Length: 312
Image 1 (tube, rainbow, N blue to C red):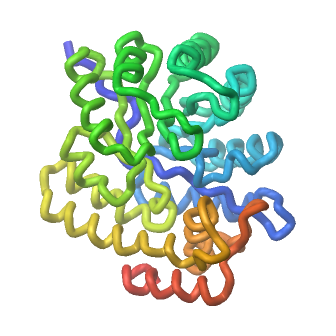
Image 2: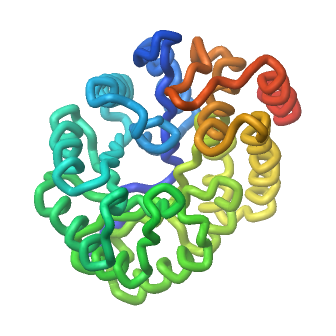
């Protein structure tokens, strides 16, 4: 009998959420983005993640964005939906909404704002999994939620069938590699999806045993990340390194914003949206308050990097 592998593998970009200048979800731009990602060969789409501005959006905006993504994907690839809220009851509301809107899996962080310890974090994930009719992936992003998901916790939840996988955006590549080893040793590895969100070291993480990546920069260059993934799974490591180097240079667009007036999410989301606007994929580089859109000078810096990367 063949042992089933992980359900979520390959390149799964965290789709940005295009907005109109009035702050509404730009449906036409979002449809074009999703169509471009699919044409680029991605293996799934992560809706309502950090790049999707999920914590800035209202529930109606989130519902609309997820509805458009699911409809546009049309079942040809899995859609995993971020259910990112500070406490368990609020997460469960988003899980039920995501199920209703047709998501194929949900992604959940540790609780935040609320003061919690490791026992509360574990109860949180177990409660969500028990209430969800969809696979659950953990989102390890301590820079935002101020809790690092431990290797022991993730391994235990994987072995118990609570988690179908993890999206690792911790920046702790040592811990991620330890997790890959621990899950393998526990016997949970065949069904557990280990996905890196560290878009400039995808080749290294794939060599270590990751099953795929969730690169925000994949919004801008999905074809490049698919080429990178294919080179990795085929063992063409020199080709993978060359593609990763090109993508790492393209990642310089996140440094386009003036650091004197901009920090945090604006640098990444603002740069991705500006690049996609320059590429003609979305109509506006508008972002949610309190972020600001990149100005003309900053847009020029993004344009220069797109030219250097051969995209424009």
